[in-house]
Image (cartoon, rainbow, N blue to C red; front, side, top):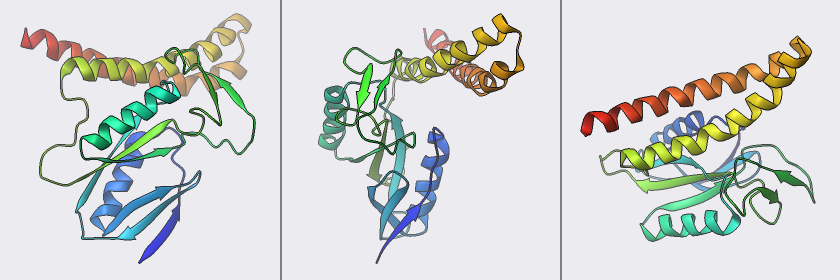
Length: 194
């Protein structure tokens, strides 16, 4: 049996990951994604496990190469959008992205900012970044867009002394704080191991 579920998580990767794992626990395996939906087929309850990875900072080649690497490791991968961009011909500038990924279009990485990774549940933790150095590099990748958005909204709020700009800056400032705490924990873990 197959079914499609309409759901939108925006940038909430942890919520999306938890939901996908709950779907697996109910006997549904992910088979595809659309802008607003997820396609499933029935499977053995809890057989699969999911994690969601941000790849919106990569170039098209970098994201595809990373997806291919994960597939070669035995995982299934699906690209998923982070934003709702129902359009044709749009170009998005991402100053925080790596070289080759700063301009995203429909032909490159626009609407392919996330990678949903599936593995057969084997009782071991599902971590794509196993070393502290890898986790630190990934967390730095995640904090960069939040810093950019915080600056875009917070600086005009201070310069104009206006709540109009301060209110949209709040989620970005919270995002920066959350990831800086995670980065600090990883750095502390690295110092303890030395």
